[in-house]
Length: 425
Image (cartoon, rainbow, N blue to C red; front, side):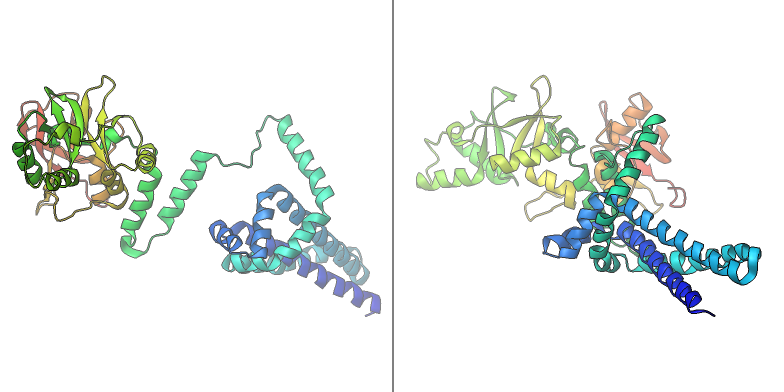
């Protein structure tokens, strides 16, 4: 073999190595964790900052890598064809095609891309400085190709955007949360919390509030000793005060403020003006989202709000704890009143109070009952049946069986809920 032939073979090997470099780099930049690169860049990692910068210009990045990859592949194929024609004549073209196809696929595509997929973050950081030089070198060519491609797409009316959009980005985040789960449902609680955080902007306070019929309220015109007795017998620290009508809330009495006032009067209850002691009521519409209300609680440094409908009628109350429970689940303390709303039965069914919310059921049992139109289990049955059911009636919605067990006037107070078999859920 002549020195020229050896030189050509060395050039082909070098070109194949460059092809492997470009292929592996493309896969590494595509598969590298965005979250990890972001964190490393915040900690001062220069390679991570380069990776983020290049990925922000994805068209230039991919264009430069593809140009470099195709350039070396075509050049390697041309040199191989030249050598094979010299050795075997016209039949060398076929041999060159077979050999280069096998070599490029194995050593310049599959092998480097497989390695890159398994070491994406490490490889992306390693090759980032070199790829930045490639992008700068091929910038004029890649820009020209980019304009040409955009022109072709525009000619056929195909919109091009590099932004996923807020909805698509949120779905991508939700998908990532679902993917990160251990065996046998491990990490269920953590995933539920993350989903709840994403749902804060879609859930209204009317869906999680404590309904007015369950709210402890005190008549402000009662004698001070009666009011104090009711405050002491209540498990809550903030209690709305009303006058003449329960829709006429004049303030919110805080147990700590009452104790402070009692101490100031030496324990004498006479002469204490409860209405003056109460803080002004804070009314919010029932359509306020949990995210907005959480921000409002932080801004006003308050934990308690009264929920009203569009007509100004009191609907209930919402607290900071209510919103936090939507994220982390039920929070119980030593003063909470235990209310059993769901009781599991030996046959796999559940006895459920009508006031239990669908969100609590979905969170606790991994059900998927819709909560867009109704917030409670009783509301769902009314919504789907389009009637006021009688005791003993049975309905089947979304694969669940609902049997009405108890009513109070027109309100469903207890039902038996039978979920679908796990294999069908």
